[in-house]
Length: 392
Image 1 (cartoon, rainbow, N blue to C red):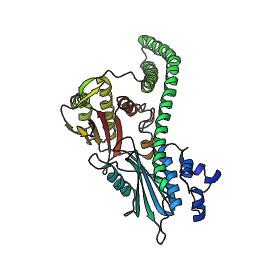
Image 2: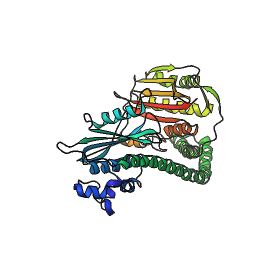
Image 3: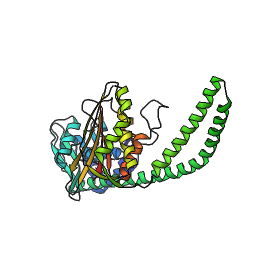
Image 4: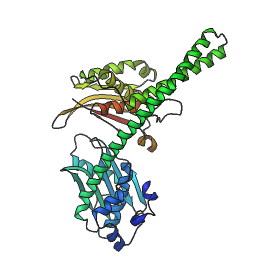
């Protein structure tokens, strides 16, 4: 339950996670300011939703409350459920592009809740756009308390603040990482260079097979550390994109060709549907990195004989068309920890030592640096779907 549990004994919010008498509920949660003060310090967004769900549950005396917030993408949602047993975040299958915003969000929250039809649905809007919602279920024989008028607007405001805070914190983390990588690169690369040169010189005159193996390993591991520092520097402060007009379908097909041997080796059933003449402005090299890392991730995820589907399409967003790249696999999916850290640098879901964990984080960094969005969803049967939305 995260911060909810840690703050349980502090101040006026000591009973947040406990069922409390109606009179006390009215006193503690009677104002929107109390709601805002209870949840605003929380990060990440999932924990903020958990505290909000508890506030709504106790204030309205509900049996079950489900609170949901849209993410940066149409396909991304964050959900929390609070009931008598406590509070937790819920997985959700993001909405498809063809569904309406408010309607799709309500149906997705209802599906994630595991309950039947809700007794009450409260949409949460910011500047006229639905960004979240609250579903309420009453306990048998207990009528839901009236919802204060300002609670919906304040909850929506809080969701916006949490998202803004997350973005600012991410920016600060990237800047700190850039400073660290720059300093580490200078201090570490010099001794690494000496190690590589020394190992190569010793290897040149060495005839013993075991010593040659050890010297090669020393040099290889030193180069691996150098690459790690270089990746960290590129991730934190990537070069400015050199924009040019590109056809997303053609560029994707070109990258797929580089993996032909690997795909054949694993017996993967690769299916492609690449719409032609999907024009985007992008850096050709950086775009190739995005497609390569998503495809490499899918290849590593599927078993021999598995299936990967790569699609390039467009979506009409009203003001402009969006280019959409989709990479879908039928691998084993994600654990909770992997989902939480999927785009984090140095995190890898594979066995320790099998990779630096920079592939997906580099893809995320490049896409966002181009003004696009990248999201991941878990398929209903098995596997993952990575979706990149790129401005045309």
